[in-house]
Image (tube, rainbow, N blue to C red; front, side, top):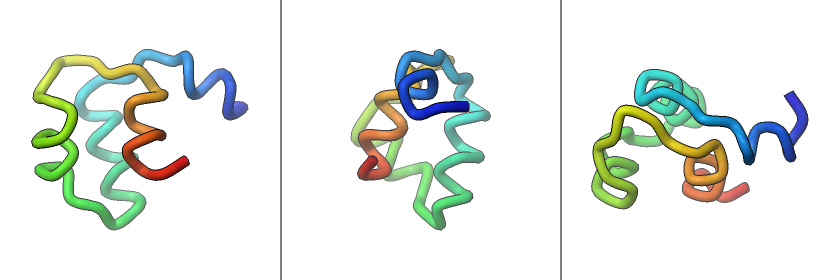
Length: 51
């Protein structure tokens, strides 16, 4: 998936958790910053990861 597509994608909570774990980050910190939701925009996850 290209960066632009990833930014626009909707991802599930589990997909976000896996991607954050793949970057050796704590999902609990992501939840504190972005909230506990069933879905997130790809941009929200990527921005939180620093992309």
